[in-house]
Amino acid sequence: MVRVKRGLMTKKRHKKMIKATKWYRLLSSKVFSRAKNAWMKAWLNAYIWRKVKKRSFRRLWTIRINSAVREYGLNYSKFINSLYMKKVSLNRKILSNLSIRNPKIFKKVVDFVK
Image (cartoon, rainbow, N blue to C red; front, side):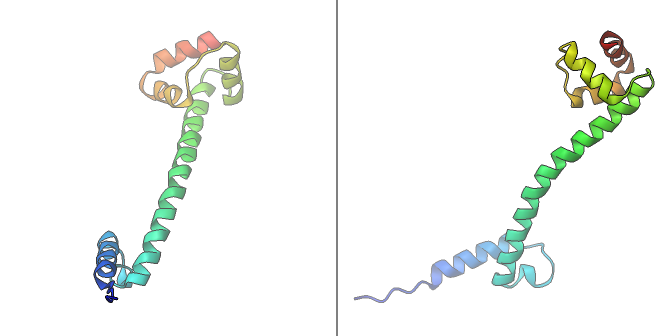
């Protein structure tokens, strides 16, 4: 039986991992075992922060809407509740952008909701 040497594929896999971690610090871009661990950690963090980004943007939109609505004598929770009661289907991102870029239109929305 012929002996099978697997060095070629191993080297190819290692080079691919080192290339993926090219700009990492210290040995994380040079040594395969460290590079593999750093790469897995980086992808895990990227996955986690994609979820956190959604949360933080929603929080930002809420703060913007609250500050814009308070000028008209409402608070955020009452405003959102009255939006649901009137069946207005504007999401928080759109309301936030309206409050910043088009305050006149936002005022009309608030007046309609009141």
